[in-house]
Image (cartoon, rainbow, N blue to C red):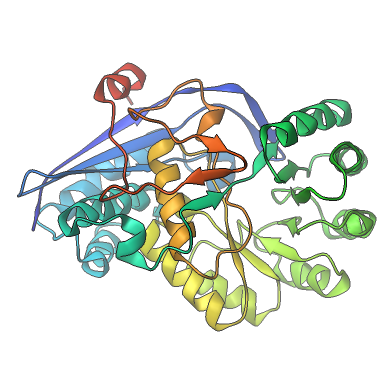
Length: 366
């Protein structure tokens, strides 16, 4: 089986409401979709995205790396040989993991179709037919956060992620307000997106200790592994890293420095399913759990998340997937949440059907 055609589409779909974090505010998707066609006429689709204030490059960069370097490189490759595919992409251009993710997912979609099995069966053994998911609260006032949290619990969510990192005093009030609103039976996690210095992070972590959080995520800049190690040692609440880990090598350094108790694997950030599996396997060998983060994917990316979560034993707790945050989607039947979970797609490949009219409607020229 060979890839005979490769096309990329840049799309922008508005969010239902702006999503504010410590590093910026997102109002719409910055996605790319890659379509790979095999010599058997099967078609695989993959998705990736970016947020320039977090990851350092914008949608235009993502798009042109694919057009100029990655898609020409993978033509003629066998989509079932992910090791060779990633080696070829790395030779074409170093880094650029989020662009490589879109190719990786499209290749897995093709490989699953060729094997007549869902991707979760292709990469492992699914643990369940559903995947638990979280809801996320951006940086809003404590009263708004509390009201939204109550609504989310009423919708069936059992895990809520709260964004912090802009103002320590307001962050603490927001988190306390949510805990008061939802009670102790709902699991909470917070994410500072690198927003604090060491002194502030120590103060915030100490103040959050009584709230019984799942973990505190990335309170310090990605490079400050020494500071993260100090925090991880000082508090009972687990410390998670996100922006500090893009690759297996990053994960190995974090583990060696005892800079985290848990690692956030985001499939786009880490370069696709293939590389994400390698990070999860390393962490499992070292006794470090991982959780599945999200980049506000639409349904194609969320389907890949579901397969990865189901087939990866070292992924703990609920997945951060929220395609319903957008006003629309690019698939015929979008993923939906029911009682705090998403059904694992069961058809071959990633298990969705692209709505090409929607792709054209939301397509942008870059």
